[in-house]
Length: 302
Ligand SMILES: Nc1ncnc2c1ncn2[C@@H]1O[C@H](COP(=O)(O)OP(=O)(O)O)[C@@H](O)[C@H]1O
Ligand SMILES: [Mg+2]
Image (cartoon, rainbow, N blue to C red):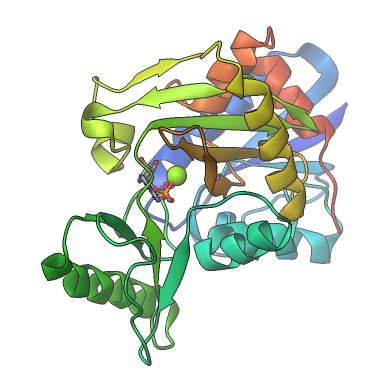
């Protein structure tokens, strides 16, 4: 029987979501019978001091911050303990929307047109208005602004740069993106298998913080459209371009003319009752415990 530690909590603003994910995962792994001894562990600091000795592998149910940006991954690498999901380098790339853009674009993965605003320069939005301005190293729709006209642009850029500066030091950067109207969908990858695409229909067409966590109006469906296999192919290409392994969720926007753009990759996707990877896995015939087991089976370290 293997001793599995489920890491949850942490210090990011996604702590509560992480605890829900972690409790779900721990319960599911324990339900698999005598296969695993499951140790749920809440982290209250950005270190592994709370990790018990003699652990065979860690299931990382941390979201955001040190738990998703390569920090905990590097700490587990240093101890030689296998863990779920992408390694430290890939986690670091995916937590940074500018680094992600560069990695995807270099590999020919389609993305929305973009530019970067810094203290030195604020280029005009690459495709005019509306545009989207983002704090590049945040998550959960904090610091993501839909900007409708030039009058609001400078303010959004200043806000996004301020968030980036306060959290990460340096000068502060903002990512400016072409606004892609049209459908929104996400593809989960487990191991190297692309799950069915989940289409997200958020109120007002904007999957922001409220639509994610506070709204009952957001609808999730499984489109049966011909674009789905192509989206799964692109999702896997994005997964590879960002050097991911184990599990990730690839978020898309599909323009009205059918052009697909990868918005971002999430390397520690939610495992709550509302989360999209578990919904997609269920659609593919994989129940929650089997999904957790598949993610755990792919655990490794660098
Ligand atoms: N370029 C874009 N065009 C249209 N909508 C976007 C664009 N970028 C982000 N959005 C909307 O904002 C949401 C959050 O943006 P995202 O880049 O995924 O950041 P987060 O890390 O906060 O999830 C997306 O789910 C989508 O609804
Ligand atoms: Mg997102």
